[in-house]
Structure formats: C-alpha cells, structure tokens
Image 1 (tube, rainbow, N blue to C red):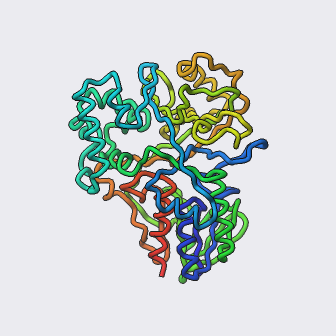
Image 2: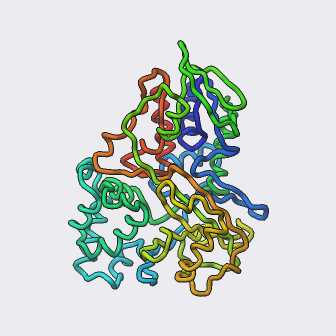
Image 3: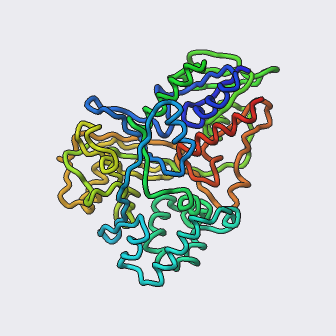
Length: 417
C-alpha cells in the first residue's frame, strides 16, 4: 500500500515505524523544515545540542520513547532535578513526600490528606471512575479546600483560564499516575531524537517531503490525491496527524461535528548571562496571580550548560486562549511584559542579563479535557475508508507527550491492512 502520513511529529514517526516494518510504501509530508512537531527544536550557532521550542522531558514510565532511543541509536539519560513552587513570592520545593511534609503553609491534616490523595492516584489504575467528575470537585473533597487553593487552583486558573473549573479529574490523575521524579532527556535534544528517527526510517525506505504544507486532500474513486504547493500525488491510504479542525480544512470530505476546545502555547526562551533561579531549580510552578506566566523552566539546571555555549537557558511558559494579544508579540515585546514578574522571582534580574531571546507559538497545545471526554474524542477511523486521523487529543486518558504520541502512531498503524 502507498501510505501518506501528514505531519512528522512523533505520532507520524511512530506510524511510519510500524507501517514500514509491514512493507508499506510510506511518504511523510511535513509543512516545516524539520521533524518533531511540538517537540521540534533549534540550535544557536555556538550550541552543541538543540533546544526544544516548547520545553520537553521524559519520565521513567515513558517506555515507547525510551525504546525508540535505543532503536535509532540516540541515548536517553536520566537526571535528578529540583521542581518547586512560587507562592506568595517564596520558593517551596514540592516534588517528593518529605518536601510535602515540610511545607509550612499547610497543617498536618492537610499534608496527610494531600499525600494520601497523591499516593492513591499513583497506584490506582482505573481512570474511568474519575471521568464524570471535575478535578476541582474531587481535589477539594479529597485534599481539602486549603490545600487545593494553595497548591493546585492557581495552576488550574493560569493554565486553563476560563475553563479551569471544568477540567476532568482524569487529566489530573494521569499527571500523577504516570510521572516520575527522575527525568530523562535525549542526548543532543529531542530534535536529535527525531532526526535520528528520520535517518532510520529513510534507511527502511520511508520518503520525506519537508517544507510541503498540504493544501488539499481529494477523495478519489480509489484512494486519495494529496496536494501541496510543490506536488500532487496519489495514495491508497492517508493518515492525518493534524488537529481535527486543521484536517477538516484540507480534507473537506472528513466530517466531525463534535469539536474540542484547545489552548495555545506561547514560550519565551531566554539565553542569559547568569542563572535566574535559585537552588538549582529546574521547574518552577508560578502560583502567584500577579505574575503573568504559568511556569519558569531553567533548562540548564536540568541539562548541563556546556552543551549550550555555557549560557543559562530559561523558558517562560504560558498557555493562552486563541486571540490572546501575546500571540502577536515579538520576543522583545513579550520580555518587556514579563520583566516585572521575572524581577519578583530574582530581584537582581534585568534586561541586561539577556544575550538572546526567541519566541515560539503553537495554536494547538493543550486540549480542554472536560468530564466524559472519551465521548468527545474523534475515532481514528473515519467515514472515508482508508483515511485515518491520529492527533494529540486521542492520547487520552494520558496527557500529551512524546511517549503517548509514539504509542498513538503505533496504534493507528494497526488499522492499515
């Protein structure tokens, strides 16, 4: 079978890996110049490693991603990190049971209830019992309102904005269930992992067409005609890894009435002269409402700065609704917006610390996972035989990530006979 895969993110790469092993003739068509999708990256002139446009790491439970690294010859190594929370302009470590017991703003009962809830989510495998309830309601009930208001509500509000109280408890359960304290990262960055996967696939007969945005997919009497600004080609099978709304624009025959809301992401990346965060903090959740961003991630407190010209690298991350004015800003303009907040994190910080800055934007970064979300998911099969969709929504009940994107790619490949 001649198979077109639209998109070279890890879902598309995973589908190609599975289908190539079955002897299909695969062409991956990618709008951009490099693979990786939302895990794609870039490399400044004095860096040895690439950096992701949007922060990424792996967990010890990410079997599919770890196996891929071994398969394509890209080592993936584990690191211990400091993950903390900023609340009332003070730093609190919050990534292990001891840190929770030492957290001074909760009484012993609050701490025990919170710890018990997190431990329960860690071992409980049956996600469907949480599908009909919101995280807001369940966490208030199990942990108590004080713990929820200090530890979780600020993050829900910053991440999901007006949707925060509608988020399913399944979304929160998955974030606790499948995450580990030790984090992993591919040697050279996720772009290196994606690039080595492309090399591996090419050796196995897969063709890649980069810089080729698909403009139209036409259903024919047999198969499909895929057109870009550069070429048109006939295929027996088409797999779209684009969001549903984007797929509908290029494939008018594909109908899907139930729409799922998304938030976009805007990430400001800073190359600094000095480290921003104290105590070697890698991940800092921002629980203070007067700071206009969700998280500050100092990548070089995770991966050695020697790989990046010995310069500290920091993400300032935000999830934002469509139409938010930050989507229209340059990196310099957004830095000015964020400067007062960054000074509250580190009073010595100034614009003079910044060597370089970049801004990266993604329109479809986070699905709004509401109760009974499984009923809203688009099936991978469609009303057009031989046309399949596999996108980030369908990793549910897991949250988005490289590992589950790969798993999704392997799964959609099973439908191709």
